[in-house]
Length: 605
Image (cartoon, rainbow, N blue to C red; front, top):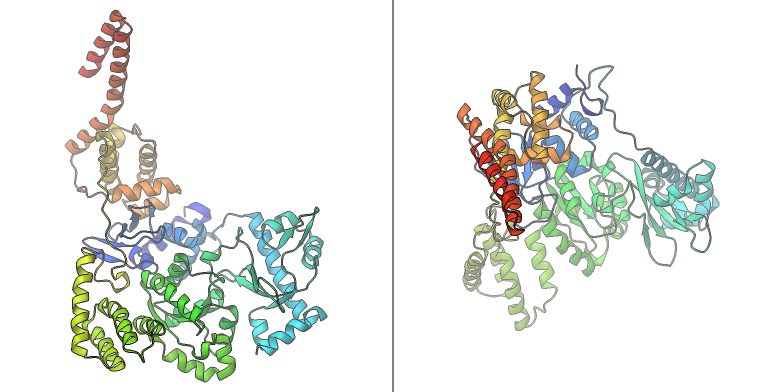
């Protein structure tokens, strides 16, 4: 059994690629639309308005014309989730019930000693803070506060909540005794450097500590809530080797099983909201890191859920925040609903005031994004006045007109008519005129059939295709044929070898000759996994997106090989011509004549 990268047998890698279809893999993160033999969507790796991210099911690869990222299903998971190659294969093998052969083939994930020490330090720190909260005088006041907020001992243990005493060196001494490098701990976000003198002090002091875990359950950061008055109310760990807040969701490690099962995710703003909802029986809740939702977090949600219920505070700020995240969530293809909290309460307060049963009713009556937008707009108008009614109708109509379904439009127009005591027919007429105007402005919007992409991503002017030099195009054509046919690769190997002019093309050719020498059949996805080179994988993806015919004959190969071989000679001729002109300018006509005869000889060749 041959072993590939990271100690993983080639057979396991091939089994993963055979099971993990590229379309299924990518669709968990990107909304794809069929266009001929390709599928297209908005790239999850860079911000774009026109879809340039392309998936080819036939070849099991993806490629983005915008940012140049490309590869197979394993490469996609590596890019989107920040996995190493062995981590991606191991995760995908587990997801597809592919077992490692007994006694061998356990993926060797490259060791990162600094990362391992930091993970150990965070795990021990979380245990220390939890112990100090529950078992020492330091934590008495913090425990009293948590219980006054309705937090049970069971939840305190479940979420490993702790307390950092209001002292300068509790954690410094703890880590120093265990021989951790304090400079490394400062860089890792657990300690702060003293400004006025050498040494370190605890980053978190006098705060209730909420450990933040990665999706596999490792503690990677903390959020510390101040006990009593003071600013900032919450202090988060800084970005470190372990922690990237734009890619992390609080409680995902505990909630992912429930989310995957129900395909529904509850999105909260606060840690306390997640915990209270968990105790009320909702085990599919996550929260952002006290910051706005990011595209990465939305893509992460799409990978495990089909629907998100936004459960934000019931005040103006909470509603405004919900309005901001709706387009982000719909932008990755998620269905979105909004749970309406009454009395301006946050979910934690609501559950404590009204109980789990009433909260369940709020969740069950969560409204559509259109309904929520209309409710949000309504709060800005005084409907008792005629001017207020007309202003609200004018604001509401564009939201209704943007809906694709005529049935949905009718439902909301009738509601609006009844609410404002205005004629349904006149509202419908205004809505249709507005819709016509919107469609004209949208022109050829991309993916018009997709609700998630409803006119938000208008088509910009497409860049003109780059015309490659003849030798460059010939090299790409040769590699395209070689990737699809072992016999074509054998012929090119005999007549050109590795004499490609572009270094990356020569490297790909060398890998291909070695790949076929092992008796392997053409398989682009499988070949890419043997490269272990990011740049070469992107180049192969780019080449395989060519609309070139796959059939060949010797004449086609010879023509391309001639073009490739001609380039170095043409380069030399151009160089000689420049030398000849320089000799003529300096009055050395004998040298110019000699160079002219060399040029003629080269051109004859």
